[in-house]
Length: 381
Image 1 (spheres, rainbow, N blue to C red):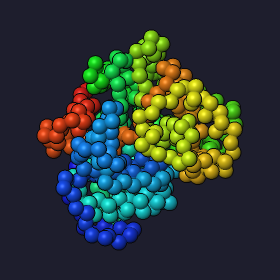
Image 2 (cartoon, helix red, strand yellow; image 1 turned 135 degrees about the vertical axis):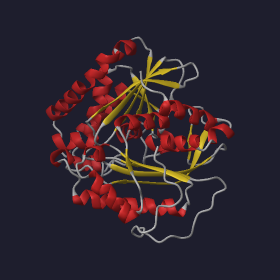
Image 3 (tube, rainbow, N blue to C red; image 1 turned 30 degrees about the vertical axis):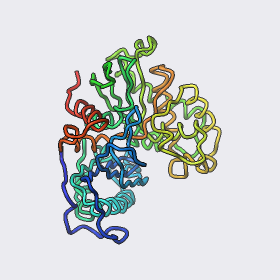
Image 4 (tube, one colour; image 1 turned 180 degrees about the vertical axis):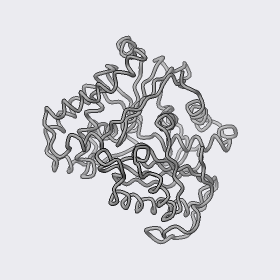
């Protein structure tokens, strides 16, 4: 694990807005940054065993850590990557502007440790090394590109507290901008997971949206997206015969992605997106189908006006729905649990584990760190 401690090194560009002094915390602060094909997202948190607003919670409702600062911006780093094989200058400039904000926040909170990771766009781009060197030069941030398997492990570590006992297997998926990761798990009676296998398919909302178009999506175009994703899922199904276990009610499903949380927000009829309501909620496959049909009937402008979608996601949401529909068709479990958490939370649990937080902190922090430790260290078999 690559870990940056303290502040980003001096010499980078100045943050987008001036610092207002350093924040003080009774507990050490930890940082986690996830730079994906579509989003740049940062969490800064402190270990917490008392209920507080913004705390990440286990399935029992107990807090794991308290988020003290967060940042999320759609940067579309992977825009055009599927056609050119390289990161485009406008996309890199947008991303660096967002990373300057992240660097500012990490400095202000004097983080004790941070892990900053990049995923599919940087894995695929021929100019990834040059881009990350430029990021370090202009912002001071050192970002590592992680493998597909590490990405799936971290997402699992972040989501694991939402798994429940009662089903001996679990399928966890993360629909990203440039890829979709799936984890196939055994779930013990204590609801702690053991990995069987992970896989990554090179299809995400940006790659599909660019290939098929996102402003106007006909029924035929949507069907072709679903078919392409379905074909890419078949090898994983053939390797593990998951469908038969789904039909025998032995599998629970957990989804983490902007697609899943957006559909959950729409299903819950939220006037504006509310993480505290969405995270941990359940979404039936029938509801997924109904919402997808509603969204497909809307033009781009009407999708953009929806409070749970917005203009930045309006041209990508149907591509995400196509990926989700393919998953639901392949593995007919009937419902999924929604996770508004993932890689960043997995990173934070891993950093706390490394520093021994789980060994000296009782309750939910200890449980979540133990789950993260298994997810991060146990080899697939």
